Image (tube, rainbow, N blue to C red; front, side, top):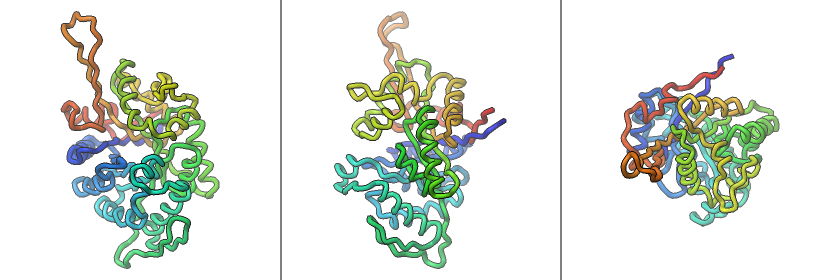
Length: 346
C-alpha cells in the first residue's frame, strides 16, 4: 500500500525579506506549505504570511503559530481575512497560547486557564471566519459580531499548537489540525495521536490531522547534531512544558536541564538522505499526517592543516538564522530530500 505524506518547510524570521525570498524559492521547488512562526517578541508570522500571499500563487501558507493572548480573537480574525483573500484555499491560521513565562513575564498579561482561553478564542475565530457571525458570552471573551454582508466567510483551517495531552485533546475537539514540535515517534504513537483521537470522539467529529514539526540535519556526525540540538533547545530550556513533555515521552532532561543523547536521537532527524527519508517516514508511520520541516545546514571545517589532530570546528545554520547561513542554490535551500510536495511510503 502506498501513502502520500505532505511535507512543508518551517521558516523562522528575522529578517523578513529572507523569509519571503525563501517562500518564493520553496514555491518554485514544489514545496507544499511554508509555515512561518512568531516569536513572543519579533516580526509577526501571520503578517509575513500575508505578505507572501501577495507574491505567490500556489504554495500553501500557514502561521505556525500566531500567539493568542496579546491579540483579541476578533482582531486576529480581521487579520486572517486579509491572508485568506490573498491566498484563497492556500491559507491556514495556526494559533497557540505560548507559555506562562512569556505571557506573564514579557507581556504582563495573566495566563490563567489556557485551555478555556483557547476554546473561547477558537469559538470566536470559527464564528467569524466560518459562519460569518459570533455570539459568545464566555469567561475570557464576550463577543457579538458579524461580517459585513459583502464578505463571504473564507473558512481557513484553524490549526492549534499542542504539546501535551490536554491541549491535544482540545485540538481534537475544536481545531482543524494540531501542530506538535519536539516529538519523536514514541510520543506521537503513545500520547499525541491517542489524545487527538480522544478529543475528536468527545466532540463526535472526525479526527483532525496531526502536523509534526521535524528538525532535519544532513549529517551523520552525531557530535554536530548534538551541538546543534543543544543550541536550538536553548531558546526553549526555560519553558517547563517541554521538560514535562520529554519526561512523559520517557526521555527526561539531564540534571543540568539539557537534552540527553537518547532524546536528541529520538527527536532530531539526521543522517544521509536515505536515512533522513526513512526517519521522516517513521514519524508518519507513528501517526503524523503531515510534516513541517526545519532544515539545518551543518558545515565542518577542520582547523589547521589536514593532518592536524585537533577537533573540527563545527557550525550549524538553520532557517532560524538566514542572515548567517551560507548561500546555497535553490534545490539545496529547499531540501534535497523534499523537492516534491510530498513523498511516498509503501
